[in-house]
Amino acid sequence: MSGDAVGLPAELARLGWGAERLAALRQEQMNKRLPWPFPVDLEARRELGFARFDALLAEVRKQRPGRDFPVGARPSGASAQRRRASAAGGQAAPLG
Image: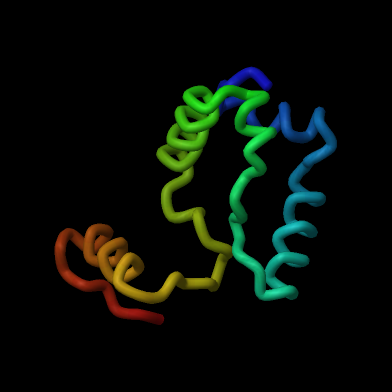
């Protein structure tokens, strides 16, 4: 894997993880009430390299803000309240 956030979708598709397969995996996880996104296996992170993996993940999150959760899903709890407050410029954003 190249470690290039811009080329990540093409790289994932080349490895057999295109958008359709990822969407199916996400739906399967949600149907089982398991976390999404789920933790990445330690061996996969070692293969890419921890620093490269963390940098790539940070870059993808920066390019696609607010996409950590499936469309229509909202995180709950204190961390979600902080995230909504931050997005609303310090004011708690309403749920819904």
